[in-house]
Image (cartoon, rainbow, N blue to C red; front, side, top):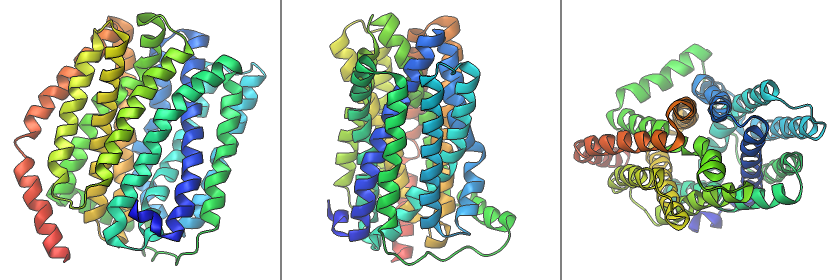
Length: 405
């Protein structure tokens, strides 16, 4: 918890805690709304794709644009726009004016805003901490917030859906964005140096760094593979909850919450890590754990084992995503941080979008259990391949640490 010793990070941390919880409540409620209205697993995949694709397309350019402006002010502005999106979604749902087309359109809007929000939040953490040695701990604590939201948000959303409606969940999310905006507004930190030159020049500089640095390039590849396979489980969970386990919104909340619990444990583990080279083996192991969880969950009829398998999937994905973020930000030069984070975010969420779309389309043809089994097999094969590059990756990270020192 040492990063909480920094005043600025504390304001960000507690505002982020409220915001993340609201976002997870909205995400679960939206999934349930789609499946309740249409019963279409394919539409679940399409909606997830629409929400996350802008991260892949807009994200890298957003990083270059962010590095040319005042990040703190932009972060506050984006929170206001995200709150507005949630208010509109709540209003349309309350008036029974929502349908598949509007849901997809609102998801696209959310995706575009998140393409700016994610790199803004991540790239500012180093400035809020003010100490490079405490940055890995701050990143792990930030991820812990996200994953505690995954643990608490879905069961809370299931309870709220049983007592109220999807519109109330969306309204709660709108209010939650104010917490982060207020927290960031109270932060006092020097504006980070702005990148100079045209958008094309700034973007090219970031792209060249990602493409030519071997550990950065390979970590992005691992990130893409894990998220196009394991992370797409979220698209299939409403179908498992209703059709496989015969449950309702509460069942969905428990399944999603189990994955969140595993992810939360993963971030607690990462918060204890101090050196970057040791994270390489941890990241690769996370891919293996995720693959095992998918394989066990796919055709398992026992609820208790399904919850354990979901926890393993969440743990493995968290270890991979957060560990890679810690490695990339630990290696990135300060003046490239916004662009490196944007490439991380666009890969993380963009390939999640592609995986979600593919999972939904495949599940519509061959069933959700077979679709999840295929994802598990593909990720298991990739895990075996990554064992070949662990030593070189670790050596490259050690060399960069010595060079920075």
